[in-house]
Length: 130
Image 1 (cartoon, rainbow, N blue to C red):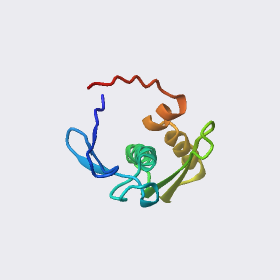
Image 2 (cartoon, rainbow, N blue to C red):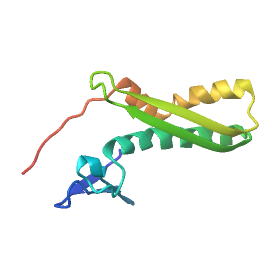
Image 3 (cartoon, rainbow, N blue to C red):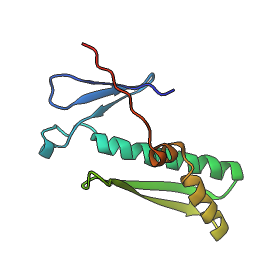
């Protein structure tokens, strides 16, 4: 189970995000009133999909001993239409990969845990404490 704590103080929108071992800063861009001290929430969401995809592909390629030298995953969030938001993911793989391996790697990208979670949806339960 993943557990993250995000704390926002009086510094407008600057948020410190902690896991059990790491901390990062989240913020909003200047044009939205933030200080641009870290990634925005949408960027953090995209980074989850991008990093999970890249790691999953690396694990698979290593297990298969395929000659993959680099994996780059670019994710763009399209949320202008609030009723139909979408993400666009581009996976770039460098190395000696044939067409059959490319097809398999596409299937593996779609099997990464974050992709599966986002594409099937999830329930969010919220409680508030004072």
